[in-house]
Image (cartoon, rainbow, N blue to C red):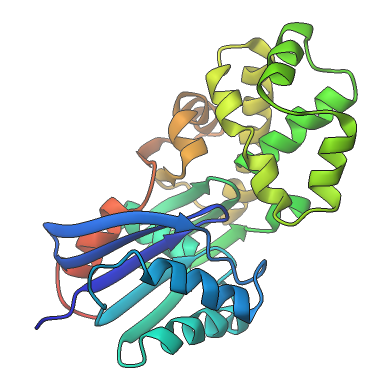
Length: 283
C-alpha cells in the first residue's frame, strides 16, 4: 500500500496537519502546538503521539514546519520525536517561516510574513529563504502578532489607558485582574498563548478607534523593524490568523511604507500541499 505524505504547520498555539495521498485527496486536522523551545523531549514525544492518534494511516514521508525550528538543535529534537514513532519514514524538519514562504509564494520571489501568535518575516526565492528578520519571540519582538497586540492591550488596561467602554467589554469577556494577568504572564507556562488569546477580542472590536490605532502602530513597527531591513521592495504575502483578520489594516500599513500586500492566507497549508504533492520530489 502506498504510504501518504504528512505535512505539518505548527505555530505557537496550534499545529495544523494534512495527510495526503495526492494533491486532491487530503485529510486535515489540528492539535496543540509542537514547540521545541517550550517543550522538553518528553513533552515533544507526547505532542507527536497526540498527533499520531489523529492519523488514519502511517505516513511514509513527513514534512514538518514549525515555530522554534530555525536552528539545528531544536530541529533535531523534533525530528527525533517523529523518528521514535515513524522509524521508516522520510522526515524533514524546517522552520515555520519556510512553511509560510513556500505556502505563499511556492517558487516565486516575494516577502512572507507570519502573523499569528508570534511573527516572523523573510524574503523567499525559488522555494528557499534568502533573508530573514524578526522571529525574536514575544519578549524581544513579535511585532504585529497576537501576543504583541495582547501585550499592548493588557498593558493599556493595567496602566489605566484603555477607554472605558472597551475596558468594560474586556472585563466581561475575560478574567483580567492585575493578579491574574501577572500570574499568567510571569508564573505560568505558555505566556505567548495567553497574550495571543486576546486577538479574537481585538478582532471583534477592530472598528474601535483604540484598537485601530494600536493595530496600526504594531503593523508599522513590523514594517519598520522587520520588513524594511530586508533591503528590497518586493510583493508581500501574509499567513496567520492576525494577518488574515486584520488584513485591511495590514494592507494600509504596507502602503504607508511603500509595499503592496498581494496574498493573504489564514494558514499556509493550502499552498504547502501543492508544493510537496504537485511533484513528487523531496525539497
